[in-house]
Image 1 (spheres, rainbow, N blue to C red):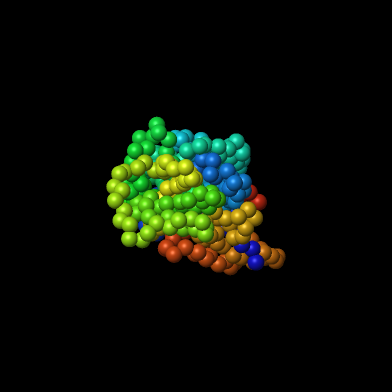
Image 2: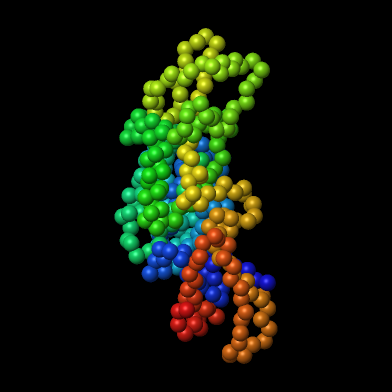
Length: 322
């Protein structure tokens, strides 16, 4: 059996357009916006991002006529690529640009990046489907120059959820590819009590545990980022990072970053593209013949399929779009 995933730039015999049942674009084209965390905590996973995610998107998800947008962020968000796809050379340009990216940023202003992406998507034409793919560990650690540096963790999470919800209401599909947290760093969720830590750090035998009956009287708002170290001769530095709970929002399709060479691919596990299966050997045929095929919808939503072309020997033999 021959199996291919619908949505690739080149598709041998069949070229389909795939749209959600609701909010389908009339032109049949899409803007795919990738928001990529370019901070230092992403460094161990960048080869995987290039090989298992970004190339997977360009190979299996982007179609002719679509436009690919890449936005990176650490201290500030930067638009790296805007490329309309009309040939395979355009795909090669995108992949070449991937190779020049290095995650070396000290900070990660996740909130500024989400706000920037929301404005960016709103500035695009309205006659195409909008798809946003966020690739990040979700850590929020803005620099002092950020307008959100003094924002409390709870307010920061509220702003993130508000922006994502607004994009969802506007018909934008949002995917979150979550990278692992850096090793040895304590993580606290944004928008929750500072007594809740993710993951819960291990307590060694020599660590003092505060009495449970001690009330928490601290009400001062602290900016997201490393917590200040309390003075004390024997006190070791205790740093925390804050991370968004974006992966818990129902409207956001979330998956973990796949391992290099891991199967199935990102497009199979997260984008859940439809797949087409047909006989590999058709045998000897005349000018008119039947070609049985099966289309499987892997998603939990209804889709509308449009058959644009059937290519045989570089020629479209389809009389009309179906």
